[in-house]
View (cartoon, rainbow, N blue to C red):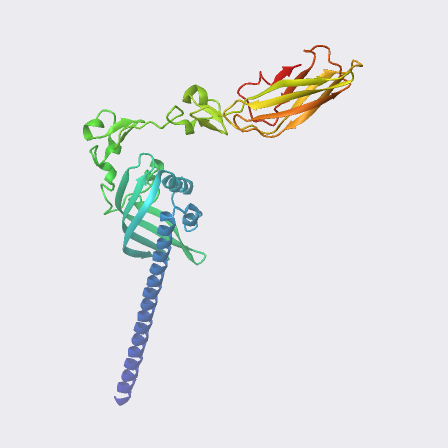
Length: 355
């Protein structure tokens, strides 16, 4: 009897140790799973934070680096097009979000998020606010968590109808998620059309309703000569083109006139005395005076002299020596102003005199 009692006691102790060890192992395994789930949840929340930063910065490539193209459960190309469509059509102002919960599915993690997005529609300048509730599925790829599925309200890519049709609904998502569902009124002129724009205080032009009346952009005319070019300065602006701009008054110019004032001749040469006067309303640059005549041998000849710059109304005198010239009675020789260095003259018909 004592032996049987001792055997039973030993068996009881063995069973107690077995169940205690088994219970400890099970409890340790559960704790390890909980720690793993918390670590993975933190990883997923961190990845989502990076996604939001890239989206607000309109950094498409940075965003797509956090998406697995190989494991993506929807059409990856459609999602890519939708993301770029958002950046083309919207100016993302700010996105606030609140993580509702993270639900593990073995290694994969479901992230549920409530959010509010404020942005501008670049087509009409309308300021919009959208709210929603979305679910994002992440999977571990080479040690990193990447986005592989989107569901619920469209936080990303909502500007593309083809992508909106592909995103499944979830329980709890917003039924009406955008202030764009407002109607035409004084605060939402962008929703008005030609029929109701003015009745809501707007101005209809350029195929949209505006807060301010239409003001045409200025063009080249007498009141906007700075908008004219060389081609339309005179015709459209009634202006005068010089110094690479259209001016309201004509350019001031010199007007040089040359006169023969005296002559002295011998049997073999001669001297002609001249004066040059600036009759214009602008100073004249330096120029040349040139006499052309025929020598006694019949050969053509010339002589020249330099004339310093002339102020308005100024007169300069000079003389030209003409070798081998025999005066025959006048009219067969000329003296001419070479005004090459003068910018322009109002009258060049008075630049020559004969003797």
